[in-house]
Length: 179
Image (cartoon, rainbow, N blue to C red; front, side):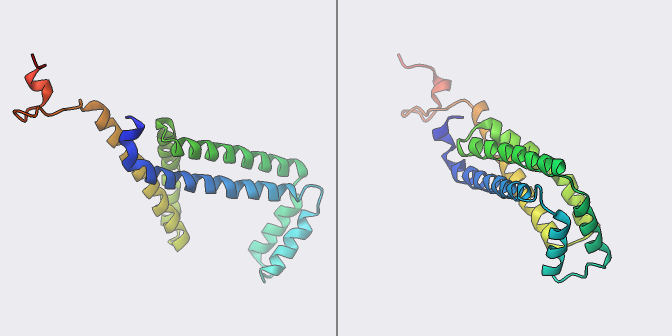
């Protein structure tokens, strides 16, 4: 389908594109934040975070968090930061493709969003909270929208263009060429 014919989907694709780019940006910032902890005492930072959040460090979950932070190595931080960079590159590529109305990006967005749906449904069934429901609903919305765009573009490619004859109102393909 030509870009001019897809103007009805442009705004929606651009909204999804901005959403994907924002996810990539958030993960990029988080990855850079991880790099700030290289050669630092991550255990002490975890203790300070627990105190700032007014949690009791002796309770079960805060103590698990603090212990886990104390075992993280610099190599693991680097690997997490590189993973965040890879995720960010994928999200930015998808966002660019959606912004430019590329069919590959529509398929990629549909498939990558669809992969998360079973996990999100499982999480909602495991415990109903508003953040879990919100994430599920947003992802369903994005996947459904991209599926609709793909179906619409496929239908438009399959149906032959029909120009109407001015005299009889029949499609030109039915009456043949004029003599």
